Amino acid sequence: MERKPFVYKSPIGDIYCLFEGVFLIEVHIEGSNQLKEGSRIQGFKEARRQLDHLDPRPLESLLKNELDAYFNDHLNEFKQKIKFITGTDFEHKVWLALKEIPYGETRSYKWISEKVGRPKAMRAVGQALKKNPMPIILPCHRVIASDGSIGGFSCGVEIKGWLLRHEGAYGKRGMSIQ
Image (cartoon, rainbow, N blue to C red; front, top):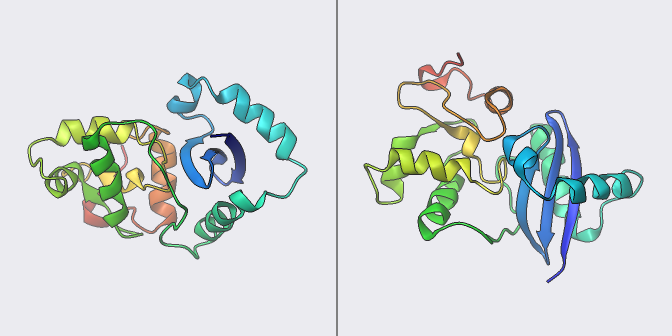
């Protein structure tokens, strides 16, 4: 099936999205480790050059509208259809559990590990979150350490902090950014 890139300009940098048919399969944020290490960066840059002067195609319109609403404080949950093309069953469970974290709230790695039925697998959860193929859409930025520290984020802790402040979650549950 044909894959189509889409680039969204956001307050945190360009967001590179990849579709397979009607499904979103990848999201990378400019400057993230995933994008730096990914082999698709050239394809995304080429798509950006091509799409800078065009309106999004109908396929990307829902995602563009949802991202517009999210960054303008009018969207709490994404409805865009997604599909996993990578990851283990465990990783899929972890990524889907992220959808249960409400906008403006955070949960711990332990909460996720309990949610997926592996209560002692906090480190494995952290590794799965590091591989999240769709940050923001599957809100791994809402996962923090049990002690309230921000934890890691594949797109960088600065972006994680920005997203948490944007959602009003910064400072809740004793969270701190160090």
